[in-house]
Image (cartoon, rainbow, N blue to C red; front, side):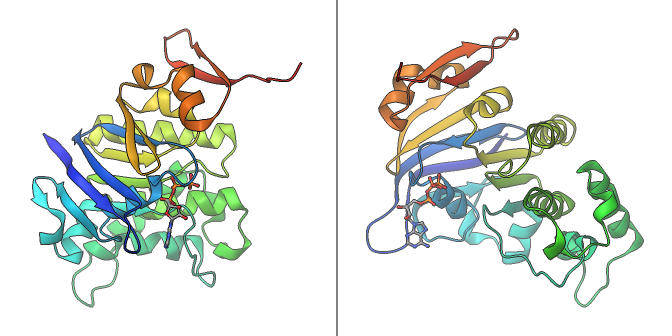
Amino acid sequence: MTALHLAGVSAGYGTSPVVRGVSTEVDSGGWFAIVGPNGAGKSTLLKTIAGLVPHEGEVNLDGAPAQSLSRKEKALLIGYAPQNPVLPDGLTVTDYVLLGRTPHLGFLARESGSDLSIVEETLARLDLGELAERKLRTLSGGEQQRAVLARVLAQQTSVLLLDEPTTGLDIGHAQALLERLDRLRREDGTTVVSTLHDLTFAAQYADELLLLDDGEVAASGKPSEVLTAQRLRDHYGADTEVLRTSEGHPVVAPVRTTP
Ligand SMILES: Nc1ncnc2c1ncn2[C@@H]1O[C@H](COP(=O)(O)OP(=O)(O)OP(=O)(O)O)[C@@H](O)[C@H]1O
């Protein structure tokens, strides 16, 4: 089943669109990574899917045009974690992650014991259990990033839109998070759409990559097809070698050009 369908999507902030003519499909339970150089329009495309930037063309979620869904319907379907979220710094980690349960509550209803256990379990999974009662503003950058992802995971949506989810995370926490997302899609059929600067991580976890450059699709397909040294030179201006792991996944290694 198709979780996300884009046809001829153009979007931006003013009169001239930042993203132009993007068409693609993402299967339910798939992992789709949007990659590309700084300013290519990756975050804009993700915000467009989340309904935060006006667009032309078709954005369909689970077969329904995104514009036809109410705010609540969208919040039950899509969890969106922005790249630089504004954090309400007076809140504790637990209270903040509980906000992810809001779409599941009835009008004026308070969170139930089951909402609290979902939050507790999510915090434990993201290695935040010991920080549960800490104020958000006292957390390190990587801990805050994990709290933002915990809020989105606690929302328990079928589609996750994650803007650079591994930014600020050390290699171990980044890997643990990506593994967690991978398990979610395998066990619950959650669809993951993420931007990722780390192309080696993108190649390990995503089954499809969309390479954006200057707002347009420069290439799309399996990571091993998209990630070539020539493309990385053409679109990032980077000198790289594309190596392979023992399992055959591409590893993008930057190569020093000066002697
Ligand atoms: N709110 C905004 N108003 C006006 N222009 C914006 C806004 N947000 C982004 N842009 C512009 O749109 C273009 C694409 O930005 P976007 O954040 O989508 O790129 P990106 O590929 O996610 O970049 P990065 O890798 O640096 O995070 C950039 O030129 C940026 O300056």
